[in-house]
Image (cartoon, rainbow, N blue to C red; front, side):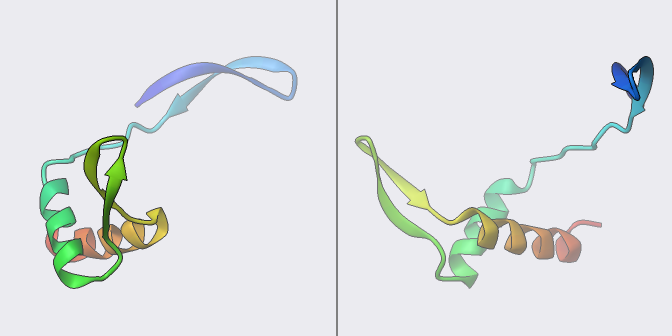
Length: 72
């Protein structure tokens, strides 16, 4: 847990905040599986760089399902 000062009902208080456990170790695999399993990824240019373009909502929906299935 961590915390921060916040104002609640006009009064400054210390509010505890739950820390998130962030692990991005398998993000490359999620991206590869997304491309294999769906048709939501397009190739395009961002400036001069070839890039993979995907709408955020389908990506997040896929990643959530992937993590529920593959992360233990």
